[in-house]
Image (cartoon, rainbow, N blue to C red; front, side, top):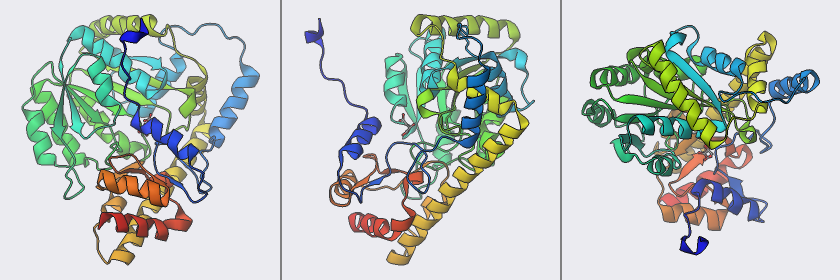
Length: 394
Ligand code: LMR
């Protein structure tokens, strides 16, 4: 049987985690996989999460099954977090999923049932895992222009021109905030134009919202998602609780569908739940119950928001530090874009050879496309890092 198989490509982001772990140099710097790190280089369990877990452990009465859609209280709390009261819930259905990737997969399968082989547009570039996932779902994968390698901003006119040329039945994957891998994001005015375009063409927005709160705050980061979904009859949304709740290994996310009316929402939901039942039956509870506990308790929610704000501010601070260190050393503003980007990542625009050299000679790890996880920037060694980046970029 297995002799018919050939080697599958390894996942570039996760493979880098292994390479970094195996590197024995004490000076190594991890700017690879997208996990938050504090100033000690630790990915902490958030205090609000710890408190919620203690409460869950002492109050939990049963381990019986949750049902295919998962933790219902979690679903309601996530919808309130993303939309507040701005969305008619009769058109919305939500299924708790194992992580944000689980929600992407469930929603891709759902769309495949409605439109097999649909044209599926992703930003150029996009998160490395979007591409194989969309191909595996059988979509006709296409890209829309996004990152401008000259300005390090968004090529908005070109992006919009492509979106304006789409038709009903096409699918457009949008990063709700904190674009991965580039760090370049749409302004509210640009989101308004994207929403108008989607409303006009009838293309289906597929929003990946994996970093809510990591950019400019929950409200600002939710703007695009709220605007698009308020403007169109149908949409899907993949939510992740990995980053903003620091629940990475607990795998908690949600697949959300918005239909034209309640009757169509019920039918689409029956298909979504059928996808889940045939794949993993039902999701695990722990991470979802943690998020439900936090979001439905005023004190825990306030504590979580404070912790989220601290993480966000630290990433913005580190962005400014790196830009300043490079500016001082090069007397140029070439890397100032790092401080205007938002979210967990910035694409530095280095060649693959330069990235490899940084790894081999300086022990600096980033993905081959020169994406850095800004939370991994070493405050105490920013000067050395700036020197190393400048040396390979000349
Ligand atoms: C990343 O982009 O580094 C994260 O989303 C982790 C992952 O699974 O790739």
